[in-house]
Length: 120
Image (cartoon, one colour):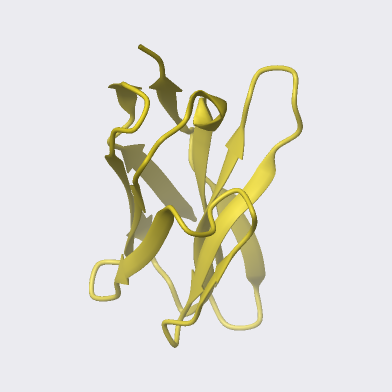
């Protein structure tokens, strides 16, 4: 079993920056990728960015150009650096990990989310 704990959310003014972090605790036999989703009120959860075990990153339009995802592999901690934030970035941000906690047992785990509010 894997637990993901996010931190770093909060209230920020438009144009500001914020860095989210997510730490994974528990056994990871094999890591496929970690990433971030977000969900705004009344909207579906959407993918923001992912990073795989080789360091390859992938961004959707939600995160491209303003967000940077990175990972500390030693502790399986993933960060999402967000810049030039806009009110439409307001959402609950969820950490996701796609891993094998034991051999041949691939599962997707989610954190509880951290709220990001962009407002003047």
